[in-house]
Length: 139
Image (cartoon, rainbow, N blue to C red; front, top):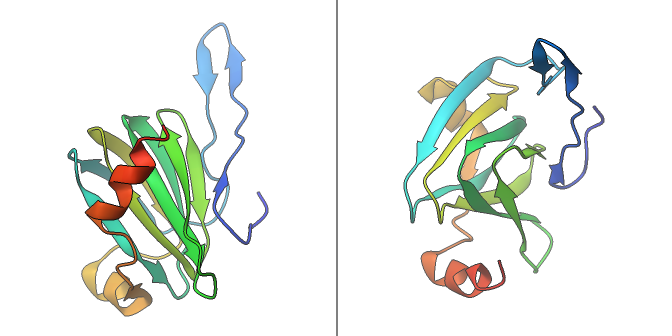
């Protein structure tokens, strides 16, 4: 998979046969795989990472993904739903708003221990609950 400058909904092909299927989520060196569950109304992230990247695969539910380059004025958004996989590169401002209970796998380049995570994370808080109400009407 190529690194992308911005958010991308990754097109992953299932490998199927009579036994079922295999869905290869990430074929890169990663140091963390996390299962995250979010409640309705939760806002997560609202930050960027200096070096870390991550893939998010949605197992259940859906969320609105907000993203922008720090030099952009406009914030972009996308609906991410069950079965989707998205990629977030380093330095991309990103946040999620969970309008449904959501369970997702997050596969990251860096370790997820508190010290490593906080050293690499810069909080920007560019998404607030008031911002998402208007956007949710579009979906």
